[in-house]
Image 1 (tube, rainbow, N blue to C red):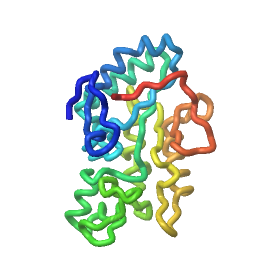
Image 2 (image 1 turned 90 degrees about the vertical axis):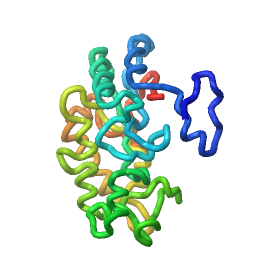
Image 3 (image 1 turned 60 degrees about the vertical axis):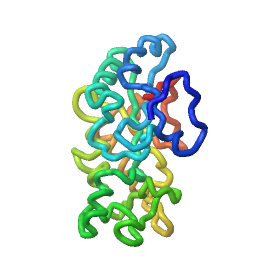
Length: 234
């Protein structure tokens, strides 16, 4: 739902999650000198993966950057330019849930015997399932699945690792809803999963303890590095 920059945003309701005011990763990159002049050391990006909403916490895939934001090229260019100025770039990853249009969830709905069907809490396949906070657009992930753990953070080509490796890689992640990841009713795998996620980050950002890059949960007793200011994607 395209909007002009001067339009008043919708305060709530369906429109509030569909409005697009034109922000891009290239736009952030073009303003890096201004941010550097302010003393910014870390740029935190809200989710950049494709989704049905503009907040993008309902990702439809973790394998590419939303073309509306400029795609993979724009993210790599932003990270490269930030690093040239001594800045770090932190992504935002939803480990607790996906969007209901996510490729894993669609595969799970198509085939109850698929590996992906074990990634979610189905109460009646294919259309009855547990959503985070009861929101059907955000099906909750079930970390009793070893294959889910492998794909999210365990493998060298996992979501978490893929964006931390190679040239112009992210410096770390903010983990969204970290306190609820791996928890549902009597099932509480949160500590175990959290430690595994932190271990995955440490493997690819070994300087985390000394310099700050790494995984920073959204709810934690350990403070993350505090930037002077932050820049979002839109």
